[in-house]
Each structure stands twice: as structure tokens, then as C-alpha cells.
Length: 214
Image (cartoon, rainbow, N blue to C red; front, top):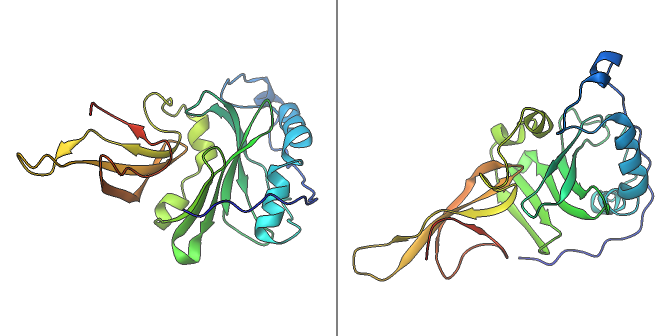
């Protein structure tokens, strides 16, 4: 896996499109952050790291004026995180998602949807991982913000972000060789095309989630 490129300083401007009416604002949902919290998270955190990195990555002064969707949840390591869509200027689709730690503003994860190539460029800033995975259009059309809003599984039930490996099994009776089937997840969603068989002593990722014994 390639090492991540250094995060360069860059300035980009963002406009949050408010879409909640007065009644919706009164609804309390612990999985969502209100408009006031969104403003605070962007101002205090995202400008310093996440948005600067995105500007560097896309090599452009991004126009994120279409950006409207945010949600709050917890990841595998009990971080309170903010997940937001990335929509580039002139795009009619979500171009990816970025995850920042809510309280400290640390950039945790980033996924760039390369739709024309049917691939996702994945970044895990916690474990310093950077790689491409094949993915179907169906996966990239999942609205992950909506998924969080509708009470997704908790991290103890499924991996929030990264590799998850199933129970080990012997390749053939008496062989002494054991494998696991591992798949990559983004916001609890399995990327089916990532699923593959790995030897138990050569699992993917820095910290794959492992099920079962051995």
C-alpha cells in the first residue's frame, strides 16, 4: 500500500445549504447534528485539515456549494465522528465521503468515488493506508447519510470502516493451512467486490477486524 501524501495547506470556501424546516429542527435524533453544530464543526475543524486536504487532493479550489448532508455517529474506535458528502462543482452525484473526528477535528477517513473507472480510492488516516478498490455503481449510489439517519448497525455488530475478516477455516482436511474471507467496509456497508480469501497469517490492512478464534 502506498503511503499517504503529506497534507498541504490550502484555503477553500464552503457554503452550507440549510434544508431543515422549523418543525424538523424540533425533532431530536441522537444520530444527527443540528445546523448550529454543523457550522461549528466546519469552522473549527474541517477548514484546518479535511477541506485543505480535499483541495490538495483534487488540485482545485473546490466549490462545495451543493454540500448539504451531514450526520454524526461513532466509529470502530469509539470516536465521535462527522460524516459528510463531497460533491464537486458541476457534479450531479456524490463524489465521495470524508469522516472527521467531531471533538478534535482530526481527519480520519476519505473515500473518492471514481465512477468512470468503477473504483473507490480509499484513505485511512488512522492507519496510514491509501489504496484503490473495485466497486459497483450500485454501491456508490447508496446514500450513506440517509443510512446513518435510519439507525444503522453499531460497530460491535459490523465494521464501520476498514477490513473485516470472518472465522478461519482449514483449506483442506489435515492441511494445516487456514484462511479467512475478508471484506472492506465503508460506514458499515460491505464493498462486495473487495471480498477475497486471505491466509490467516497474511490478512489485509493494518488492523482488520477478526471474527472467531485462531
